Length: 110
Length: 110
DNA sequence: TTAATATGCAGGCAATTACCTGCATGTCAA
DNA sequence: TTGACATGCAGGTAATTGCCTGCATATTAA
Image (cartoon, rainbow over all chains, first blue to last red; front, side, top):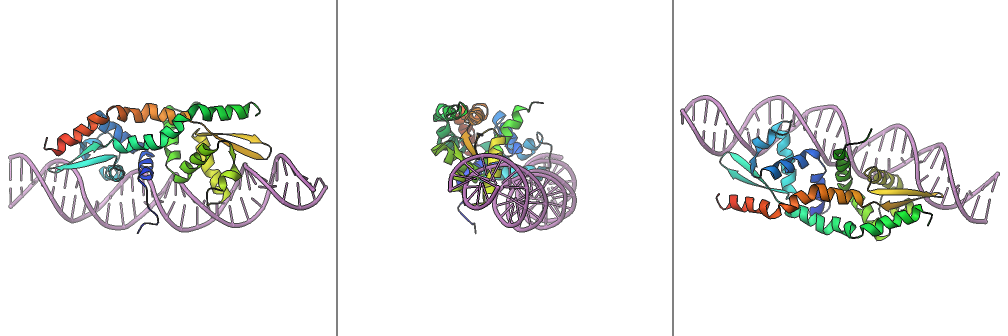
């Protein structure tokens, strides 16, 4: 099985690390609910490669899929991004001025 | 030659993709301005490995370093994180309810 | 100066990643 | 049913990543 429990935040960060996957989220942001074929038109890589990227996004819970006939529709799930922001980015955001002050202080010779 | 903003964002996302590097930012958030040796105490890997991680964080401009004697002090730079949030996360944040609505609508049978 | 300390640099190696090709399965329309 | 379409699945590979060891350099303190 797994060597250690993979936390959700890690999956989200890793999913966002690839420019193709961020582009896929951008494409879905422009028009939500696109099929695999539609998304592939904006990509410049084989359909099978896009499938893998979409699988990673889905595993990170950043998108949800719905099968309709022979098509698979993709929808953004903004919740994980919101959680990453709330639990992780905000911590540094609230200390922004303090952190910048630390460096300035050091550069000025302590 | 100046680097394009997309490259900067890519560096930040890739830097944040590793749990060790996120831990390093956490450690610096608890106490800013730590040396390489001090940061290594909380890591469980060779010092040289930590150096590589810190190099990636510095290249992404997420930390800045100051040499003091034989020590190298590390400081968080919260600006890139703020920019990533502003230019990227916020786009999805503002459409949060709309995006969730799209999926709900589809699941209910259009 | 000498010894201990703090970091820098280079090369190697196993695991992962991101792409590909080839083929199979499932669905719709004529 | 048949043929076209949309997606699924299974390897294969080159590049990247994350970790290591070994050695070099620079600074401080005795």
